[in-house]
Image (tube, rainbow, N blue to C red):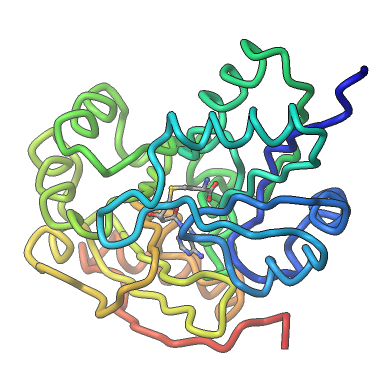
Length: 274
Ligand code: SAH
């Protein structure tokens, strides 16, 4: 008898259900079983009306289910003919262990597909008015994990400052140490920095400052939510609130005076989803 089960590795986007792709919504509607991670917004889960839903992520540092157990559950359910959605925050292949799951499914001979999602690495800065690249300001972007200080330092060691933008995921708890590592490896203390927390949710907050401020502050932003750190000249941009000319004037003034970007902590209502 043919096995008709299937697994979709689906990206849920940064939070706001309006940022879910149409394919992700369709997979959720058709699902029998949804296995979801900690950063998946509850509003997104509502699309999966008929499915059983299981939290398999990490909460307070403890895994609800080991990675191996997640593989076993997905494979077992698909072999029983069920349509499984493995739902991850942002994009499944950006620090989501989606690659490992794809390999496990392939090795087991289970039919699967990938539904890319909007990654917070790009969306969180964008929703704070920060373009990760900008002509004449940053010609590239490096997305790096801040989970492990040494791995972070090794990854950024050969990256020129003020040429590319650094986007640090999973780094909020260690922002101070990470900023010190950057300064130690030659990044200018005045480099603009920003932190965007709970992007695309009604609790979105933005902190703006400089690398040296980040390096001397234990927790620049008071939150339990996920946060994305942006380091580089683009982090001083605020395109929703400042027009281009004003920003250029500010930037030139800053370069002349050697002063830093204004520091702003803002709570913002979500732009959509209300
Ligand atoms: N696969 C996800 C990233 C997983 S790592 C993606 O593509 O977005 C988890 C990290 O993502 C968090 O530590 C945080 O740095 C970032 N993140 C996730 N959701 C976020 C949000 N709504 N706002 C800001 N950062 C977020």
